Structures are given as structure tokens and as C-alpha cells.
Amino acid sequence: MRKLIYAINVTLDGCCDHTSGIADDELLEYFTQLLGEADLFVYGRKTYELMVPYWPDVEKDQSASKADKDFARTFSSTKKIVFSRTLDSAEGNTRIVRTNLQDEILKLKQQPGKNIFTGGVDIPSQLIALGLVDEYYFVVQPILAGKGRRLLEDGSLAEKLKLKLVESKFFKSGCVALRYLKQ
Image 1 (cartoon, rainbow, N blue to C red):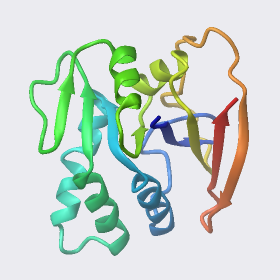
Image 2: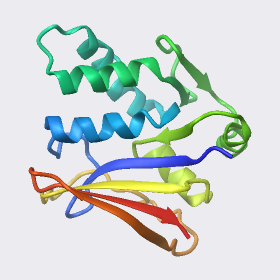
Image 3: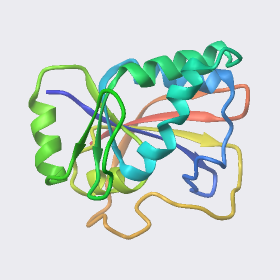
């Protein structure tokens, strides 16, 4: 069975806003390697629209760093599903799904292939509440943002979820990557 993996940058005070973090080459290399272990990305409309057209444009940018280009290539070449009721169209190898999130993810997990990767806040919060996420990667940024979106802030988690720390990695920037498995 394929695993559903959730990865997110989060500040020390729990903010998941993409503008409140460090995006250096070392972190991009880390996420490129992580994304390379998946053959499908699952996003909601908001996260998809943050990623596209940004990363496809970086892939074409001759002045982009090697780390940026590697991440962009990995992102662009991987199939994507966007759960949205409002998105009219999507680029390239992206499919828009308007059906039941739980049913679709359960079906995808049964199909052959590599891991399924998800990011953002809204769709992952729903997937966590449904008990469908198998692994969690939190990259903790050495920043206090003071404001911004937070995971599960709507209180949708019915009961406490216990995770097991299985790996940690420290970066020169002061970020710490933590990998957890669902228990």
C-alpha cells in the first residue's frame, strides 16, 4: 500500500505561512529528495496556486540556482491532483478532483506506485482528521511569526494523535527537520 506523506514548514509558534520561513539551497535539496520519493502530489486549490505557476517558471529561469532548478524539475515532472470545487483548469500533468476526499485518497493508496505527498494546510488538515496520513515531516523554522495559518486550527481533530519521532536532521540555517510516523 502506498503511504500518504505530509510535509510542511512551520515556525516555532506554529505558523504554516509559506512566506515566514527560510528557503535556502540546503532546505530545497532536502525537499527535492523527499519529493523524489513520491510519484503523486495532492493539494488543495490554495496550495496548488502557490506552487503553479511559480515552480514551472523557476524551471525555465536560466538565472535560478541549481537547488531551485532541481526542486522545480522534480515538482513539474510529478503528477498532481488538486481537490477543488472552484478551480476551472490546471496545468500539465494535474488532474482536478471534485469527489469525496476520503474515498479518492483510499483508492489512490491502493494503487501501485511510490508514495503520495501532500502539503499545505486545508486538505492536509482534513486528511489528518480522517486518519489517512501515514508519515509527517515538519521542518521547524527558527522564527516566531506572530501570525499566520496553523495546522488543524479549526479543531477538526476528534482525538489526540500520537506520533513517533523516527528521524531528525539539523540544518546550518537553524532549521530542524523532524520525521514522525503515525502510531
